[in-house]
Length: 262
Image (cartoon, rainbow, N blue to C red; front, side, top):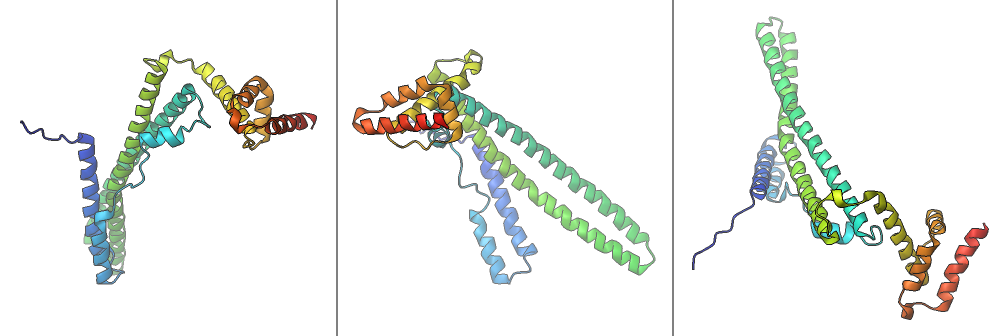
């Protein structure tokens, strides 16, 4: 039987490479920049770098579908789709912001390099030792800032990869929900009706909760229920009979009547 070699996703490979680079960078910095710590402490931090550079709490597509797109908050397929598209758009916009930050940081570091070169030229021509010393301090301060900016570039990449993974998850949610709705593209979805259907489904669910004496009423919920009593009544009648008593139903109706009298 021919052995089938597993092919790593090129994006995953690039992500692992960025993690490895950032770990090595942090390890090197620990031995140079953490001189404020004892040598044993510096070594401990350097060894800890094998655990750094990870984003250990990813928001995966299963988590998105089960917890973020929870049925109580997004009770219809249309509302799930709308929220998924909204979340995807946010991640895409954030990725462009990350790209801007990366390029801006690169240019700022390049500008500081030029400023240091100019200062070093001036220092070489300076005959006053005190002024030369002052210029030397300015050069070292800029060098410190340059190093910090260059070190931050890997962090920006790691953040961008995390956002990419979330964007990929939300893209998957959009595609799955469209398939569940029997739609081939978002152009086939009537988003004008989506919000109306979502609110009606929420109010119906509140009716089910009220029938079980589990609804926490708020002014905004009451106003919504007042605007669609049919959906609320449908929910009251929809809950399993074994979980509803006549007293529960009466309590729910009495509460609504008392709100109307206010």
